[in-house]
Length: 203
Image (cartoon, rainbow, N blue to C red; front, side, top):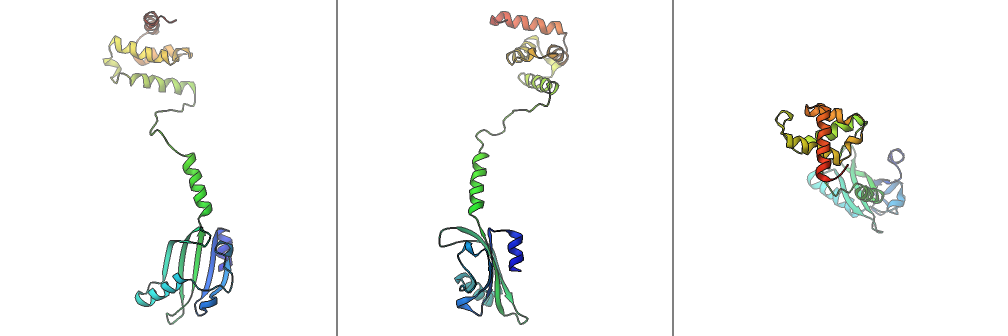
């Protein structure tokens, strides 16, 4: 079981089997002992003795996912499961210790590369020119926030000016698309553009 769990979970997991009748040398099987520096013949831990004592008092037979530290400061996520015989007496335990070092390094890296400074940006990702035109026209309509049927001439001018500032009319077919959206002729759009150019002194 110890070897199988170790090969399944990988090198960051220490798997330990204790025979609690041998307090001074309770470890009878261990894989990836480099994590805590232990080997077969190492003694029982103080936590295991406390868990056995708690089992005698309240029947608690396991402690899962708690944090411990090794002598060299590594943080471990640990689980200890008591093993009983047919009479309900504790005869051993299985311990699983995950070295969190690599996890915490990876977590810090992921936090750094996924850091967000602005929430909910309105950036859109168009797949083609047609999608882009639809998106930018809808964005221009949002500047006045009114149904097209209720738009005044000044508001339509404002929409066209927004699109011109964003160089939308450099795109082939943009004038026709905007005219259709605003329910005016393409010549009206050209007139709006000329009027904006005259007022701004641009071409």
